[in-house]
Length: 159
Length: 431
Image 1 (tube, rainbow over the protein chains, first blue to last red):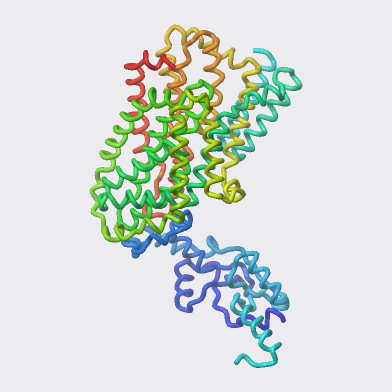
Image 2 (cartoon, rainbow over the protein chains, first blue to last red):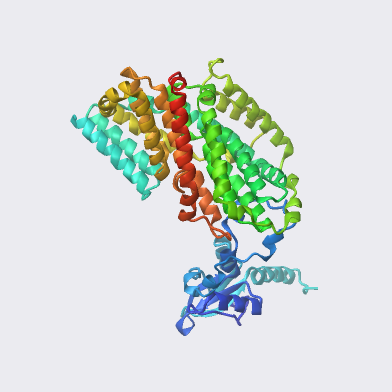
């Protein structure tokens, strides 16, 4: 099965000139985990994930602590916002986005799956032969396709 | 100067410059330098491969390795976080008390264990506690870094220069306690008073959420109480043996590696995993530096240098010692103090061979290299770690903030050391 049969076709995307704050607004409004960044003529130029933006807010020392189960009440940390958020919010996506790791719409979903595992991604942009953004495929999209095949092989329906 | 001396000096200085420039990883740079020294020595007949092996101080390496393994085993249990939370809660959320308590905890730990590891494990919990309380973490972090760095000077295993000096001068664990600990106690208390004064505004902050601090559950930080208890018993035994190692005719390295072996056996440690996490780069860096400086020594450069200052040192040992203390302090404030200490070892040994009483020079080197590290964020690896952990928090530690607090602490501790060195100079002349 090819990626184009599993992917979402209507994708919310951003442009490199957009600010981080505008991108964050898009993510919140549409409740998406990733925003493909497209340049002129819908060319895919990057990917911004919700994690990239959260990384700005989450201090380094959190990464150092493997175990934080002993914290039951985060106290003053609950309404924590770094002081320099306005400055970061006005930065453009160009400064923050990751290089576009993508898959072609005519490649198999297995190939998409291996690429996601290798780059530790949950959402993978899909491009057409011209390098334009064609869709977005998530690990849920791919996983459910496999389960569907399994159901079909049992000769029944999803019920 | 002879041709080998010139070549050896050039190789040494170039290697040092590359290490300090940080263009290449320091371990790679030191290893390349050591190999260059060895090749030059072999072809110019001033340094053999056998001599290079002899130049490597396996006592230092063994002690560092043994303690690294013990710390790594301890790290896995979550004991450091447990201790930081347990003691931090005793402050009742009072910022000044929190500074004293966490500063003391870090100091005590780093007197027995590696400074860097202690900071890596305690600092994140410290920032978390400050964030939960809604107070500025900077005074707490700087207190931990500066106080633990100061306290580490008191013991043979408290900081790496002491390990090197102890092995080279054949000073016992007790020698360090009797010569350096009294100075360190006074310097440490003064450092605490300075921090109290410099941070008077931050420490007057009202914590926003004391109850949240009290709701931290330290027991949940402790992953494995049984293993922790076993490791504490082994560590206690190791430290106890350190106190008597010279009477027992045991080298500190033997005790540390013995402790590591017993601990790995008793706790059924996942040995591969533990060993993978050790800082082999640090050990290799030491090893290469020893081999590098060994070449410099074999070429006769260091004895040439020693004879140059030998007369001064013999006639005015006090001035020579104090000069060494301050040079060591200034060097350690701006660059890594390990290469400096390792290069000073054969120089002081040469002076000793010329009839100069080397004991005060060794102590001066230990005090200077230790206290000097407080001056700037670059003074020690623990400082660098502290600064990087504070990044992206509400209050990152900048160069300016560090200098404003670290320099006064460095100056006062070095002044205390100078003063007490003069007062107890006779005692310093006894090994």
